[in-house]
Amino acid sequence: EGAIFIDRNEYSYGYPRVQFTNCSQRVIDYLCDILGRTDTPISHYKHHNRWREVWQLRVSGYNTVKSLLEQVVPYLKVKQEQATLALEALKVKSKYGPRSKELKEVAEKMHLLNLRGKPRADLENQTQKQ
Image (tube, rainbow, N blue to C red; front, top):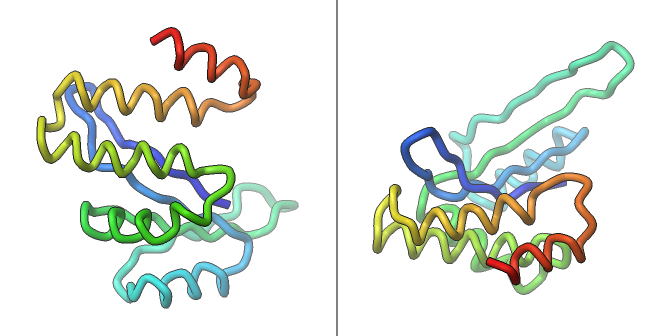
């Protein structure tokens, strides 16, 4: 499982991040090997006694995220639109800064794509209206 998103606080938007989540530590370790990361913090948690352990890897930083997304975007089926927007956000933030209206527009599109429970047609209609 994975997610592509843009961090934000009340004042500005951060760089895009990529998050991998899996119940197998071996999968997360494999991703670390592929990315050449040995210093990457990995989250490990279990929220409930009956749930399996979960391992998470968050990839951040301009160069790392850019390199990763450029390599995987042609192969993505479900998250290709988010990956393309994340690459656009990297360019926009570098050019206009973290408080720009251009970055806000890209971040809002990303937010709409990442909403849970929304039918795809509703999202496409909302995006076209903007």
